[in-house]
Image (cartoon, one colour):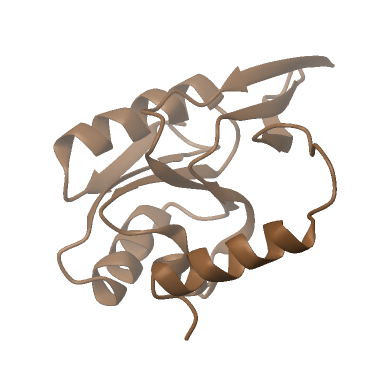
Length: 160
């Protein structure tokens, strides 16, 4: 077994979701989950098929994001993983809908942070062991940090 690190390539402020599923219809089902949850959603998704022709399957509403998803999925080349890049909406808007897609097994991350994906490669293929999402924690929040966090959540409309 060989361990590899694959860095997700994306613009700094672009959010994405990385997950694993188990069936070729994942592409269509994820597409339907997103457009059914966020009308007008701009996104691209790609899925690594892990049997048969073992192709990267893709769909989306934004060609640039579809191409980005395909590029990153091919770099990962890990069995049944999927990646969704989104513009003008956030993972929190679609995460529950995606988790409810019957073939979705797990979500590795949902973030705009820099991400490194830890891949194991054997003679059979590749699999995702985990992710490094963002940077190492720098400390414990102070009362001032708590106040800033609460203010920010209210400023962007996530809390009243």
